[in-house]
Amino acid sequence: MDMAKTAAEPLLRLEQVSKIYGSKQVLNGISLILYRGESLILRGGNGSGKSTLLKLIAGLIPASTGRAAGAASGLRIGFAPDRLPKLRMTSEEYLMHMGRIAGMAKASAAERIQELHTLLELPAGSRSMLIHYSKGMLQKVNLMQACLAEPDLLLLDEPFSGLDVNASDKLLALLHGLRAKGTAVVTSLHDPLPSWESASTTYRLHEGRLVPEESGRSGEPHTESAFYELDGLLPEFSRLVLAGHFPDTAWTAAGQAVRCRIPASDCQAFLHEFWQAEGTVLSLNRKEESR
Image 1 (cartoon, rainbow, N blue to C red):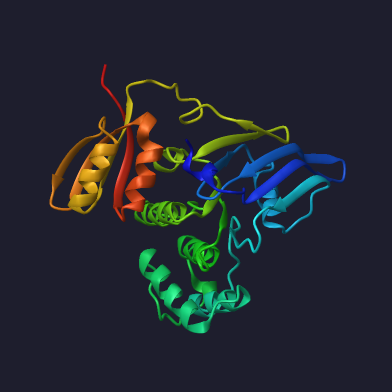
Image 2: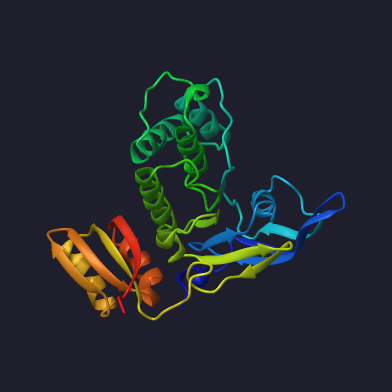
């Protein structure tokens, strides 16, 4: 059973939603139900409507027809657009301002801002303004503001754009952690990202319609020989519990450091329990048996 769908009620419902700009229909009759802890990936070419759908879900633009509504009361939504403008503010000034808009107490916002700077390895306390930031640094601040209040629903438009490998791994750790706590995440993605795809349901926007993709990366044939190799940190007791729950996973361990060989069919459930057990993912890679 899908853990996310055991919740009493969905976070969000889209019912036959369409969006029309002038004579162009960007979205056409989209219906979708989103539950706590669920992760969706949106794929599609430029102009396919991914950004439009994210903005519509966020409530930033209205639907032309149909209904889009948060089914849960007091729904907190975090949204990271595809780019953050270069502002004449420091990262901490900007994030504190966004925290006040979200209704966060000053002390709580300051603590969370410091935590996110540390996690995404962006120096805190810098007096440098955002107008001087690189694309990658701006993207980190963009992601921080979306995650600031630990939202119920997180919407990310090409979140890995501009990030190097290390920053991408840090973001993945953040997303897996939020999802394990019950945050639903919707991301638009262009490039393959196996460690996030393994925990997500992927849809493709084609001619304004939302079409489910087959398991695995687009264009990549599914094979039963596929598996995931995870390197991470996990307390020994938790490792013994997970080993009992996932008997087909092979383990090597040295103290809290572990390497797991996870069958592809078990990866989503395994990652959920790994994060619930306060494990830390250092890397996750999709592999196939040599033939």
